[in-house]
Image (cartoon, rainbow, N blue to C red):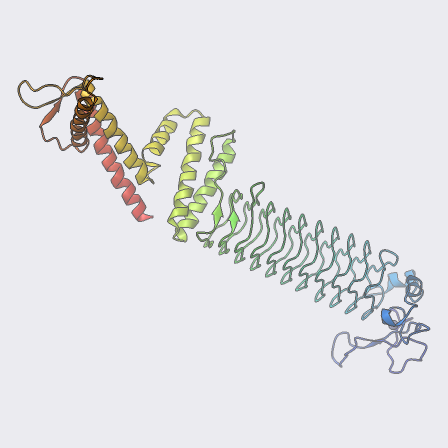
Length: 487
Ligand SMILES: [Zn+2]
């Protein structure tokens, strides 16, 4: 520090400020000695322009602040820091960009509610400073030291915090819209309820940071380290989390997507990440690491590209299928059969769509039949409906194509002729015919064949086909049963 201004002394003359920094100095502490402010005291206060209480003087102006500063040439040569201004009191003061604060030592300064809009605070030491509700819009805080500073409720829109040291800083409720925090160290920082839409946090260190209820809409978190971070109830809609590390992070009830946009989690590390009740509909997480990822029934996953509308590329389809497979795996690990089933169906439908778009007719037919008959082996209902359709269709066909009771001269089963004069007799005969045909159809389907009725003519073709369907659908029924039991 500049020896022109500071001297270590116990009793400063009365016309000097005499503020001692650090105020509670003890032998052995850093820095190794206490410095006394040698700036002239203001005429209406016992401290200098920087150290006097703004409420007790009318002379704290930009002019008096400037006058008590050393020559810029001297500031340039001083190390560490351009000027020692520790413990300065600028609460509520309007500084803006009128004074260069580049490289100044502002440790423990009271800058609460100060107007530092557009201020040059590059490399400035603001450790332990009080910056609550400070106006730092468009301020340049590149590589600033903010360790232990209180920035709660501070206005940091569009500010530049590249490489800033923000370890353990209180930024709760701060406004950081469009701020640049690239490479900033925010480990253990309190960002709860902070407003961070479109904020650039790429490669930022956010280990153990508290981001509960933070707004991170469209935030750039590429490569950010969010290990152990608390992101419960955070809004991460449309955020870019490519390559981000979310190991052990808590994303309970976090929103990663809405109807219009969703977050990108490509190649993100989701090891042991808590995704309980998180909204991930449509979120991309291709090639993400999902070892021991925690999900529950309330976790919402996407099923994008499942509808047959529009076209998707082969690569998109492959990635979507990869995601569905991952969800299936994670759901199985978390004992959530319904989620696993949904993801499995998504994967199969994507494959069917892919087969259709790429003209793989055989695969497409196979998958379509599988979907219709049994919902890819997942649906009892589909199998039962298929059985009812087969039995019903055959029932309607038999009186027309040929079934007759066993025995000599017995008449073929036929639909009764429509007799408008005797509607009741017609109805009775029709019901009778359908009951007999239905009885034969069920016997054929189940391949019981009591022998009291037998198919004739083209009826034999239908009966053979029905018996074939019957055996197949029974087998499918057992298959679906076994499949579901093992989920
Ligand atoms: Zn002073």
